[in-house]
Length: 314
Image (cartoon, rainbow, N blue to C red; front, side, top):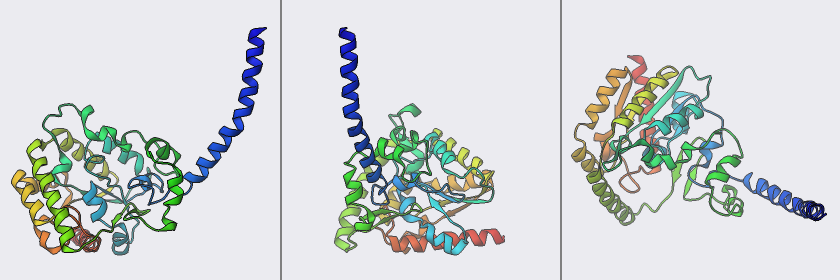
């Protein structure tokens, strides 16, 4: 008798709360439908059609290579699938994500792999791949890369109130960091010389300290080569070294004096092209010494496209 009363009471309780749960789900579904390039710096990577032409790298690549410029010069749609140094350094996590991201029917793709010493390095105290920082990246647990809205991403990786998705949507005004549908992260900051100097000083201190604690990683180099091998079966691969300011270039060259030669060797072994712009650092403007200002990004991207066209004529 008591079990019957308990069962009846539970059914009444469930009948009462189900409408509330449904109402909450409907509200969340509506709010999630407004997710866009303002939501965060990663969402749009998981909410667009799978590409056949792709850009890889970290935050230098995400800000420094503009798919729209490549489209205009190469007559092909591109997707910039670069995140940042903690989430998309070269490794098995990134490789796995790439295979999920790239359109499976790709045969004649164009693949631009932006690379720098830090994206092939790891902390000297880290010994096992399971301890690599990208193990905590959304690239490591996302399964769906072409859903819009992508509720998987929002449930797993959006930690703010979902009402913010609506109130901060791009339609109400773009944020200072806006992730375009094609994956380009457009950054708008104060470019007054004093502001740039302050940010550059901070980056110089950061990379000076970073250089003391990292070394080139055999695991990252192996994954980089595996990614090239994989992409070569689906199109043409181009390795690109993006320049940074004089300060940061000096830090990189001091820590890794033979890095450009390493890239040349990899390109030769893999029979792919490498475009190294690192010596031309004075030709561009930077927001913080590490990342290119958006107008310089367009200039660099145009030069990358011209280099690709020229390489095809040889």
